[in-house]
View (cartoon, rainbow, N blue to C red):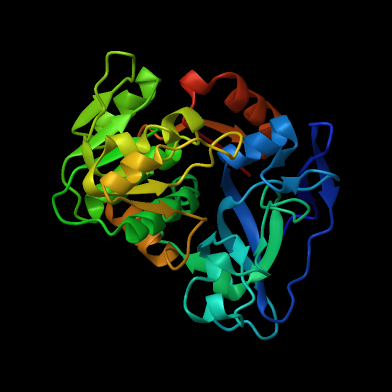
Length: 339
């Protein structure tokens, strides 16, 4: 085992620095994971640029990251589920397990959830971290650590598919063809969805969408007719402009799933259209009960990663990776940082 635990810290002045820390020791119910790969999430970029996301604010240096894969290298005295050497992905939201929401299976809404990388809680951009053994999931030996790091955003898509009650053969519209959107496209198809339409402003992302199974792609403009084009609409862009159009896009009796966080939080919506069409407007807050499906779908090929991972950096070059992801959105879909 390496003598150092390199950790990437983000401070309130938007600086990213790598510092060496001691390797942590697992509590009785925890495992120690040697991290192999991390994805840079849009939320990581928000904290990097703005110092906040929603109610979470960077006030002191902390470790970002929550899309991680790696290998268990030590187990706590009471941890019995896995052996050392098991390749795993990490579920970053550790719930209390005792409240009403946890007991009914909606543990993502647990009021006491501890979510890695939500400041001031440290995340996964480090060499070693400890986590409850119930929040790691084994992965196939054939699945690369880089691809496995996509399990976390894929679970968002799987959870959304469950929430949206996808019906066989119906038409889905994915607004935003970034990492979540491209995974949402594939989850929609894998869950039995039929015709899939992807909407984005960037042609490179729509090219990736076509390769990953989109039946139709649209670059929105003033001449674009988006009236009643889908049975279920997925907003994955986090755009207030796009969110305003969602009810218009949905067919009568359809569903709208809000996956992305709109900039500014408050959005003006056409409630008359919402009521006349008798739509279901569905909120999505992270995920629950989806990791086993995610790692299975990644391993068996139902979810393809070609074209989603566009850049790879080393942990030592992680500051440059963040800078690239921010400055080159047209050339970037998902950046992976490998340890």
